Image (cartoon, rainbow over all chains, first blue to last red):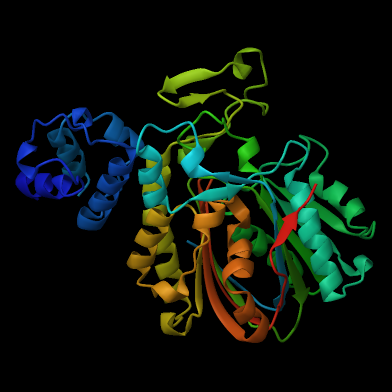
Amino acid sequence: MEIQDFIEKFAEQFDDTDVLEFTPKTVFKELDEWNSLIALSVIAMVDEEYAVTLKGDDIRNSATVEDLYTIVKGRL
Amino acid sequence: MAFLSIPHVSIRGVAACVPGNIEENIDLDVFKEGEAERVIAQTGIERKHIADEHTTTSDLCFRAADDLLNKLGWERESVQLLLFVSTTRDYISPQTSCILQDRLKLSEECITIDMPYGCPGWVIGLFDALSMMQSGQIKRTLLLCGDTPSKMMSPMDKETRPLFGDAGSATALEFDVNAPQMEFHIGTRGKDYESIITPAGGFRHRVTEESLKYVTYGEHLVRRAVDQSMDGMNVFAFGISVAPRSIHSLLEKYELDMNTVDYWLFHQANQYMIEKIRKKVKADKEKTPSILKDFGNVSNASIPLLIVCKCLEAYRTRSIESVACAFGTGLAWGTVHFRTDRIVCLPLIEYEG
């Protein structure tokens, strides 16, 4: 699992935010488009792509995309 | 894994009852500009039926049961077991099923049991009823499943307000040596009990002055400790992982052919979630009905409501093979594979005061 691949899949959950805006250090909850429905899409994407179940606290306790990537990677 | 197959009991009839009053999600004041449209698009829920102040879950279940008994032509004294499955019972005590025994004019020899299960309640309640009936000593059972989530939740909590509606239901069960067996898979994940919880009002945390104060957890996230709270992300992640796994394992365990299933009856949580589950199960879209648009999540009444609203003619006129899967509060879940043969299905009943 590569972080670049994870970032692209993460970015696909957004409609209006340009994929180029996303880096490992992106604080995703500060993006204008971020909302609870995108959070569900991210949970579904991680379930489908990596067969990992994220919990609400995983999202709440992650600041950057990299934080979330580290959690997913740790459960593979 | 709790796999169980139970023979000798048939479903004879299903009825459901909803309050007449309707709440439109587009009109709710808990949303920011454009948010209502987004929530409706993703959840599929446009409106819900909401009980008035004087109507309880047991009133809705009573109407469904009373009409169903009349239509079936069952003598009231022939009902030997009444199960009332609800998280919104009339009183902390006594059991609501005792009150329903009297209202329905059932015999004093009738066994009555309350089961405070939420969303997984129809499948788990069906399993309990069948377990008690399979020896043949109990011939007829009423399984009443319902909830009025609107009374458990804060009207100022945008996490729950758009999702939940109120409904009651009745399922009639009869001992029958020729009935095909029903197969179940039941599971429990108590470590996540806080994902859907009403923290105060039970006996771990009694009602206090403090528990009646509204607390702000975020914008339009205002509730009291006596209101139900839900960690939507946890419940979503739980549902999309356990439901498909439970269904797959049941099909595999009993060597069932998914192509002969007529209906996939998924607990109606929200459209986004059941669509994810449907795709993972690889169930046909036409065989996976939804009532979310007009009723929302009606807790343990969602499967009987789905049958009467979307498949009434089919269940009435044909032999039907179904797989039902329900999940939620507990956290707990259950999947059942069952066959019915031309059962009594009442058209949706609307409750008037």
